[in-house]
Image (spheres, chains in turn cyan, yellow):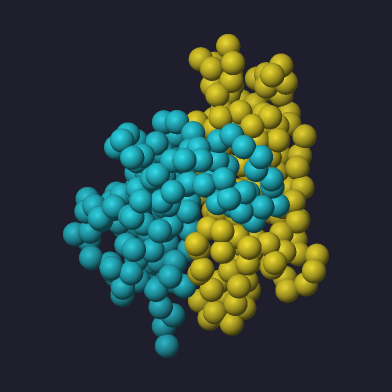
Length: 134
Length: 135
């Protein structure tokens, strides 16, 4: 089932505030075999925030997660993420096209701190794989 | 950081990726997509088997950057996910190799071009990172 082209340009409600703690950074780093011993968060940590926003978006569009493959990801930082940050993420749909029956969804998730300042922008391309023909 | 000079080739880093690692990453990242832990679901949607989260592989690339640059602040990091990293259901898993070279250093920004492979196949497309450097 193809996605509705009118999604392009739409913004979804911000995620609930996410408190960045030392424990969460340690756990995230350990999951890829690294250690975190203070300082800025690992560079790909904001995927946790972007993912929550993406899940909410996919759910609202009734897209099955198992049909999604990650095509591209980019993080652009205004400043590092550090413990003590309380962050919210707002996802918007930047682009939508179809290739071979698959939807190629461009999303842009902006991560803001408690003061409303932009911390990081996470751009993701999601490939929504078509159902196999019976 | 004198080693971050244009043209410098950075020491390749090797990381093992196992099913246990994928489960830990699923929990830590919140990405519970079953294609990263269920062969049944992965093959149903046309994949060869359970594959690593693209973000897991990207986290390894970021880990190599942190090692090379002694945790220099990352300003940008990005890649395409061009080939799946298929992770077998055994204790050894697969090895992802992250290589890199310094493309440019200017205005306090060092651009590092990466090459990320698994069993000789490039798994990330155009992976690159920009880190802040002194001077």
